Amino acid sequence: MKHLYLHIPFCHRRCSYCDFNTYANMEDRVEAYVQALCDELAMLATEAPLASPASPEAAALRPTIFLGGGTPTMLSLEQLERVLQAASAIVPLDGAEVTSEANPGTVLGRDYLRGLRAIGVNRLSMGVQSLHDPTLRVLGRIHTAAEARQSYEDARAAGFDSVNLDFIFGLPGQDAAQWAATLEQIVAWGVEHLSLYSLILEESTPLYAQVTGGRVRVPDDDATGAMYEAAIERLHTAGYTQYEISNWALGAAPLAPIPGVPALVCHHNLAYWLNSDYLAAGAGAHGHVFPARYHDLLGVDDYIRAVRAGRRPVAETIALSEADLRAETMFMGLRLNAGVGEAHFAARCGLPLDAAYGEPLAELVDQGLVERSAGRVRLTGRGRMLGNRVFERFV
Image (tube, rainbow, N blue to C red):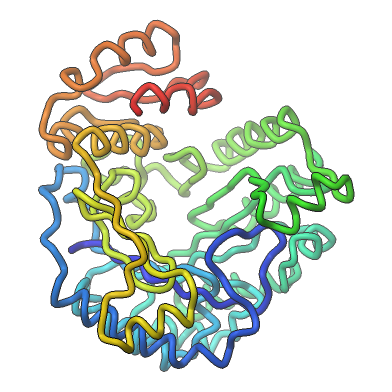
């Protein structure tokens, strides 16, 4: 197996917009959770299935381990090292892209970051979200803009030469001028990879209740769309290549054999967009090994008890059909600016693209929503703004 996701569900405080499987005020469970995660990985190592046949595009990816959350940097270096050593039985660390998410409010300075680098983490993904302190407080973030900048500089000083920063636009009180100022600061930092997401109000979150209750206002769809377009324009001018709906990398040197995808891409996320198989471990973690996907038990205590009882902590397994495989390969791949390669589709799904979707593709081309050239299908500019309309044609 080339790709592995590990979920660390602990946070110092849940953000007001977050509906991920995360828990605050559970520091007393961390050690037991780490042991359970290592034990689950040992189970996976003995059961790990062979990956499905890969297309040349998928085969070009490095093996990957991704520590997500929650906040992986709440763990001690010793705990993270144990987790990575257990994971290495599935995805060897040598030659792998090993990413850890990091909250600027919990990164404990350069010594911790040097230690993180020393145990095998070679890529950081830092959740900055905003450089406007009042907005950070509304979001429930525990860091300031200055602390985010310091954490980024500390990561550089600690030897990380591959860093991603996450930002959100369409935030409460955000306007075009504030977002433009944020983009200028991002460009000045010179970070090589950026993930920019439009705010999604999830019904289960405090922010949703605040917005629907009229206590907090967010920009309307037109204003949010204008912020997205401003990001595309400003980052292009600064030398970034947008290779996916929400992701940019500095420079344009390609990752062969995928045109339009720069070398500084996140290989783990690209595996998702190519609909590759991947394993996952940890409370609430989702894995995908065709012909099934699964997710682990959500609750930390339930998860620990299941592993201690000597069983895989899987909460649900969902069978996938060949039609599911084809549809997911299309709508995941169309998120990429390069789109879906016909050779990739055939290798992943076992039949030519036109045999599966010739008629809807012809209609989408006629509607100006997708274009076809050089053996690839990609969204047009109009198709990007109407992505859901395109994706539903493959379901």
